[in-house]
Amino acid sequence: MSVSKFNNEGYYDPVVYEALTKVEAEERATRAAAAYRPLVYICSPYAGDTQKNTYRARAFSRFAVEKNCIPMAPHLLFPQFMDEATERWLGLKMGIVLLSKCEQVWVFGDVISEGMVAEIEKAKKQHKRIRYFTEDLKEVGHEDSLW
Image (cartoon, rainbow, N blue to C red; front, side, top):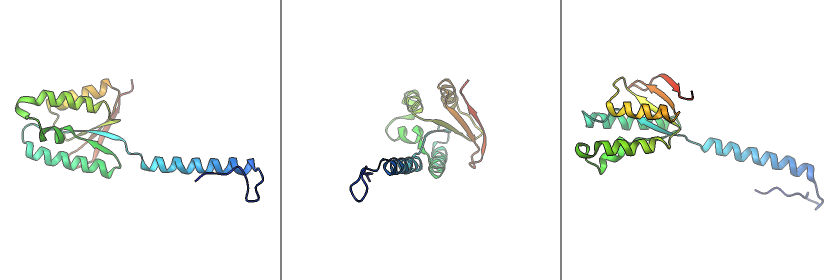
């Protein structure tokens, strides 16, 4: 929708034009804010019981979607085409690259694996907001790493 500088009779009307332009801009901003979904990094264990941990990571990712976020869970993606036994550290390094693109890091569970420690430390160095959740999706704390 475009606002005209002229009224219905063809006369220049700057007051109405300015008012309608502001209303239109506010409507666009409201629509954009409603559509915005931050990218969040899902930090949870993968090694060990990979089947159970994959199931949990999927639940944590779904939780992020329900909270109007876009989940980034490399430990769900990379095992599709990489070998955990021989390419684990490559996968972790690639995950760190993706972490740098995320606004926040969401840490799930009370077990922090070696890989998760590396992700959390990197998030702190990058001044990311880190939120902690239990396995049953209750938030138990957060860090705003903006020292």
